[in-house]
Length: 133
Image (cartoon, rainbow, N blue to C red; front, side, top):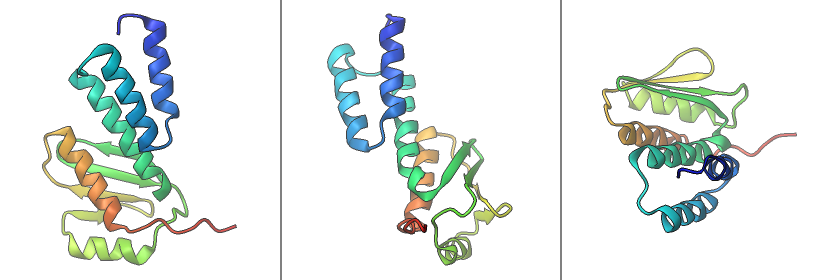
């Protein structure tokens, strides 16, 4: 997209998308207007999908390098602590790093594989706990 204002408009739409359906509609619009997305744009969309998925779990940040993934949770994240303990006991490559981080030590050179690993870890944590007042 050569038009800076149009590109910024799409960035804003993506940043404010709160559901996968909203992301899907934006993706359809982008493909409809510009054709197949370049790899960088596809990566941006996939990263935002991961943000949408991880928000209910209280994830503040994900740092994913080819050898280590760090998932940082906000204080009092809505996750059953027993699910975290179970996850760590069943997966030797996953460790607790302080009170609010999971450290995943696995060689994953491809971004899509690192994103899938984060999705798998979150799925294994179960459904986020309901908010308490």
